[in-house]
Amino acid sequence: MLTYSFENRGGQSLYEYLYNCIKQDILSFRLTPDEKLPSKRALSKHLDISTITVEAAYGQLMAEGYIYSVPKSGFFVSHIASSEKSPAAYEEDSDTYANESGEEYFADFVKNSAANDTFPFSVWTKLMRETMSDEQKKLMVNSPSVGILELRKAVADYLYRFRGMKVSADRIIIGAGTEYLYSLIIQLLGRSKRYALEDPGYRKIYHIYRANEVDCVHVPLDENGVDVKKLEKTAADVLHISPSHHFPTGIVTPISRRYELLSWASKSPDRYIIEDDYDSEFRLLGKPIPPLQSIDVLEKVIYINTFSKSLTPTIRISYMVLPEALMKKYNETLSFYSCTVANFEQYTLASFIKKGYFEKHINRMRNLYRARRDELMQAIKSHPFYERVTITEENSGLHFLLSVDTDLSDEELIKRAKENGINVSCLSQYYFDKRNNKEHTLIINYSGADRERMKEAVERLFDAVNLMQNVK
Image (tube, rainbow, N blue to C red; front, side, top):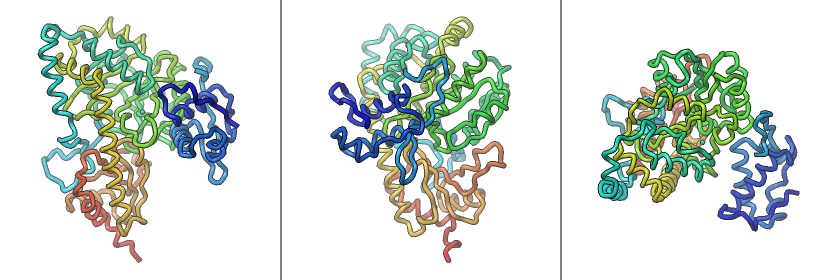
């Protein structure tokens, strides 16, 4: 029976401490692959903790791929394929097809937006005034190419406390939007490299790479993310992925597959992985999934994130963490660039993070989005035709998938929804290889959903899907 002492858990909650204890036992192989774990009830009784605590710890371990469940049999340890050089003892904007015509919809489940009343205007205004008053001299000094040190230190501290990443501020680059950072990465790695993208995936990334004249290939996904065997066949040098919450499928890449991807990258000095952690703050069940970068001991991962999701899309501030070798190359070859974010915004954001306002805002937004999701799910589940739809990937990120039983094509479905005042996209739109299309699966982005309109929006959507035709 697993035995742990909870006396020295520090500030960790019971379930976090239990989760970490079991994870370390798995990584150090004290728990072996396919070994059965105690039942939730048995372990809770043995450790004198609640069953809910054990359930939460097991749930997080399952989400990250450390354990798996077998119906009516229990929980078992997963196979973790760590590389020899990384011993095991030791999550931007969505691709949205947004309505650019200015047309108003009754409900928009495509557009990535935030309600006007969610941005902390009063706090931001106060910090702006303080910045104007206290940082006048610094505001008049040109920012380093990589961004002001105060903001990079604030980001590094945030990544350590909330994402488990031990990175130096000297390896962080601040930029105005992820598109700019992608262009820097291409210049660092070279246009002769072949870039592999997820399929299905975020089309805007493909267009950015093609605009920068680099060769792109697409790698299909299986239930655990990028298929490594098919990745090998592409002869790609660089892999661009979002392992903590893939858009649009919602797949979370488990730990065993992450080690496989790191192993792939380690086979050549020219191989790198770009980890896009675009909405990691908004996992609505359990802890945020640890980033791939946090287990990368060979420095093969370029980590990239943005404040556009967490604050507002109109704040074009993003950042990336480079491996040491690439950071050195940047300083030698690209530091002539000017920072693309104004000092005024950088100092204000740095203060916003350091004074704890960013953490409070994230917690508030997570609760708000959870409430929106729950109300929307309730509206769907209470509909008479709920048995004709299937909801998946509802616990991470700001969208979920809704598979529907309809005879309509996806094109007809989208058209009928628009006629009913509903803007919606389908999973099939995001496939590059149309042979792998999955029809009749809607992507429901609820970040900008109007709670007062949810019930009617669901009525209109179900009417557009035309489920009535299937009623016998």
